[in-house]
Length: 289
Image (tube, rainbow, N blue to C red; front, side, top):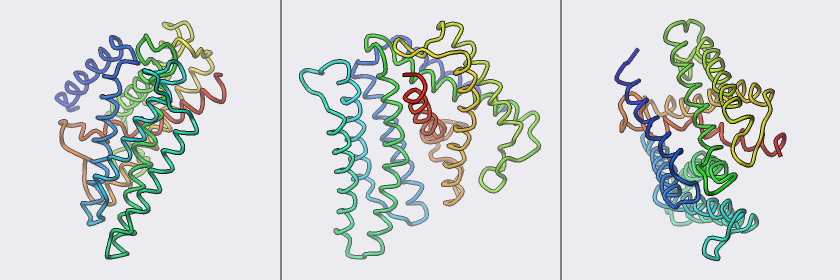
């Protein structure tokens, strides 16, 4: 095992835990942090595409994606309070998303080379869907419940995914023999997936006991829900991890960035969360409300 990687991961985990435990979710600093992850993650994704010569409208894509992230924040916030008299309704939010997508289609018209314009359009919109749109569900979970308290639902999904990743890493490095997806990610194994499920189920049961069956102040869930989510999170998260691995394998790079030793870039750290957060949001809407 890479002890340095584990130490860095634990330090990042402590910072995230303290931030979630001390900062009320309605504070603007939460928006700044979420914007940072969305912006850097989108930039890293466009960087992957640019590596193989697929040019994207990077600045346009990042800025339009961040506009949608901010709109999602005010939309979710407005369901509880009016922020200085300013709210964004559900209809306004989806109109903003529509304008963001259409603006990127129109961006093609500025390219003299139509083939390059088409490639740029497809790559830019793919980045918008993959990072800002999926990340917007983290914001929805973050602002779900009592705004005077930390964003427990978002913290819950992050905790579950990181523990599932830890279980997968521990079991995979020690017992991994049967490859899960050898072409896309040769190091992933079925044993690692099982380890992720074991860790995630344990975390879910502990969360259910400690919180007396609550995801946050607004959402309660049963022990059966905890077990089901403990099983679903590692599966959906692993699929999300494989999706990013597919992108990296296609452009022949190891990490989306090298800013954090052993952990890669922002996209490498949130790839599983990008798919787990929408899954939890859908589960809440279908079964817990």
